[in-house]
Amino acid sequence: MSINKCRIAGIVAEEPRICKDDFYKEGLEIVLDIDRYDIPKFERIKCVIVDKDLITRAQDSIQAGEYFVATGRLACFEYIRTQVMKCPHCGEVSTRSRRAKRTDIILDDFEVSPGSLFPDSVGINSVSISGVIPNPIKTSLNHTWFSVANNRPKAAQEILKGSITEKIKSGTERLNLVYVHGFHRIAEIMNDSIHQKDRIVVSGYISEHLESYKIPFRCKHCGEYSDQYFEYPIYVVIARSVRQDLDYIPSSNATELNQYNLD
Figure 1 (cartoon, rainbow, N blue to C red):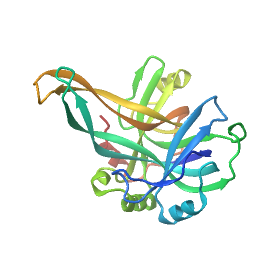
Figure 2: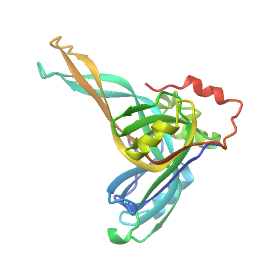
Figure 3: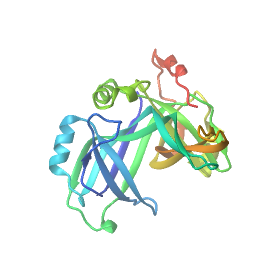
Figure 4: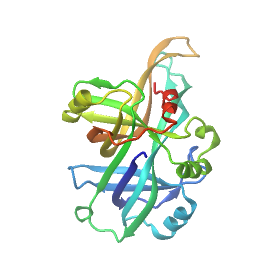
């Protein structure tokens, strides 16, 4: 059985709102200011509620400034992202579309209480996730990162099917593909103790990361070439601990992971 559990707590930064992007047909966005108790860091995290009954309860009970504690899980999606590119030669703009990934924190339950001053509000950001490493592990100086294929329960999948637009849902069934990053000592442990195709358990916290990669660009107006960067934010897991999941008993459909690869 896969692990995919998040615990988030902080001050509600703004009034909850129905998601108005292309991703959700129905979802409620909760924005939290989290003053972390475990490390000296202040961060803003966006969470999403997609269960209809939970949305109704949230709209009736959550207000900006309240202290909010929630449990949830990570859900990852592939979609086609369109980005504006500006030619450095002639200044004209055009668009390019590429496959991109998105990770959301989907809330399962929550509690609220009257807000207090930030120093008195315990900020929590923790996540535990397990799964198989389907692709080669990447490493650089003091930094190691990889993806984890995490099974998506049928019940959660059914809720997501009713909440996500059809064009984005394609290719996201059955598995979450979560990016995991480790730094310094944790990076060393990753390099020494885990390998591609291992099943692992990761504990850490959620952090926003800017995905950026270079693409060749030829301007359709002047015909000149330039290097452009395709960029978008994504939530990733920063690992505090990583270990092999030696207690896992493989199921009959474990070979399905072979068809999922990250570029």
